[in-house]
Amino acid sequence: GENVEQHPSTLSVQEGDSAVIKCTYSDSASNYFPWYKQELGKGPQLIIDIRSNVGEKKDQRIAVTLNKTAKHFSLHITETQPEDSAVYFCAASRETGGFKTIFGAGTRLFVKA
Amino acid sequence: SAVISQKPSRDICQRGTSLTIQCQVDSQVTMMFWYRQQPGQSLTLIATANQGSEATYESGFVIDKFPISRPNLTFSTLTVSNMSPEDSSIYLCSVPSGQGVQTQYFGPGTRLLVL
Image (cartoon, rainbow over all chains, first blue to last red; front, top):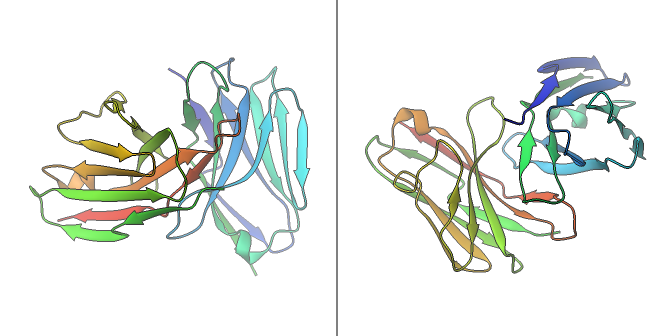
């Protein structure tokens, strides 16, 4: 079946450094790739997304890149801050053919002040 | 964006009992989803609840264990029946954004501990 692999499972960075989380998907029909941030005690919240007709998207300190050929997509956070500490989930889905989103296993990011 | 609330926010239950979790959305939505997030794990879809029809369950989840109600377009309940410690998880409801992409809004979750 379809799956999404996410690495690393845990990431610790110094405040101000960059953080990169990588995901690989298996379903070649996937065309929408959201990233969710889950803070302690809360539900996941969308932080950025990318569609398959775009290679890169930025929103302030956050960027996402997509390599359709390799079925890879990555989240880049620059100038990390302690409030970036959370669990991040990547996901892959199709925009047609039924609503089904496959989530990665999650990356626990620690930003040390 | 949709605002989703869940009740209870957390509970501690004895094995063999059942717990009903409520999910309320501030707008009308056709589809509502129920997820399970086991400790330190990712999100696993339990079922999709459409108003006026039976819920659609994912492989590994059955109606007898996780009965779902969807009485109207803003509300749904998930019951965890005959609980065991393995049911200790966070249960999340979510709704699609409805803007042509498969973005989801999630509720805050219900943290369940079964003793």
